[in-house]
Image (cartoon, rainbow, N blue to C red; front, side, top):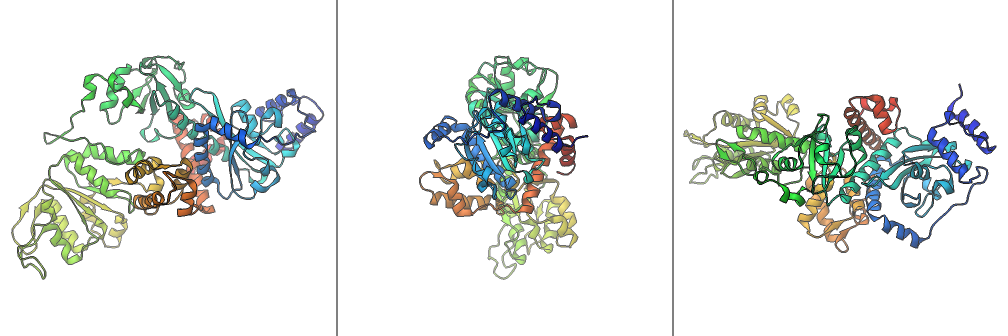
Length: 624
């Protein structure tokens, strides 16, 4: 049996001699492309000269495709962080095959083929032969063109990967391409390019459909904002306007023509669905076949007038017979993990259990504690104490109060203590992992009895206090090393909440925008600059991000933060090879696993959807 290399060599000889290309010996996409090249009058023995448009025309093309170009550049910077160190050049080309922008890594940019992939270079298939960017634009399908699969032998030392980008109306918006020398070929690169192209498409969809109601849907809540989520948009009368590729796959078999009525797709009338969205914390929809989806609605505020009056009245959440205030958080919570924590709070808060919040320093533990206080509807104060900042001999007195003269330096009149100040309110015990063992005993007693006994007194007082504790310490390890009481851990952690690090959140862009608006209303940040910032580790999480944004605002020239401003302040993210490899594998593994679940664990369907082999799906699904 002929090897792939031998088959290509045989086909190359046939091509050079003007014979008929056998599509069974090569990827059908390549065979079809070669045939189109021959029909266009291209001669494989004569390589055409490079074609380059002028600076003015390039500027005009960028302006014409400004929206797609902007989203593509931001995603290119994100891709760059994923493949840094692997000697790739990433290019964005328009629907006609003209390169509008590039970003390069390693030496490939300065190589002979790399010098031909620059802004303004024309790689249209009918002019430059089979090549990933031009052929992808011609066929609107993701593909790999490796080595001698190029129509012209002059490009046989290059390996290229390309994925199409579609507008919300299904028309071609452009192509994302990654090129390198043949030795750098990676099996996962095409999957990564497809994911990046989908991210751009989804951004385009939301921007182009901003005047319509957009429904994001998925069979699982945590995957709503992933590349495996579906997007559909409707006009004010509930008629279908646009559908993305993933939505067509999910709703296969249901009519999805423009103008289709909402209730021909989902089993709920449009008005009732809108009303449910205003009341439900986790709204769902069923399609015509009975499959249920978690949904999120965008731009619904533009259609509030359509809601039935009943839909405008917030549902009453009660605890102990009292009407609770709105539990909408005062912070960005678009990340699936953060939303899960909020849902857990909503279900538990009326039972007044102790909450234990864990997460790195600066992840927003106090903000979440304040949200718990707000959601509880308690009328008392929110009182915070840093258990790690007080000396051991004063901590118990601060918490439970003391009588006059109880210890050296005590006030003559004594003090009631923070637990009493939090009566009918919330006591937030920050840095609980640093609390001394002696104070842990007193806290455990208080949790069991809700009684406060001031230091130096025999009198006790009953209080009604919601306890919320927080720590960045590994409490299980602290228990193992006898630094934290195991019984206190289980008493505090009736409801355990985990806040993800900023670098792990999927809503970094929304967090950044919210924080920037708070620091300097009117200040804008370039999408490429925001993408650069997302690539940093942010060990200090929200605090470090706020500090960096403040410095960027003060240093910015005008009212826009540019990528150069970010690089000047923070330097290059500098993803190391080891971390890059781990990050890339994690990203691919997560996306493959999500797609596999969406396809009902169908390996073949997942492989076809991602454009990879079955072995690649097995590999990344098992080792994400």
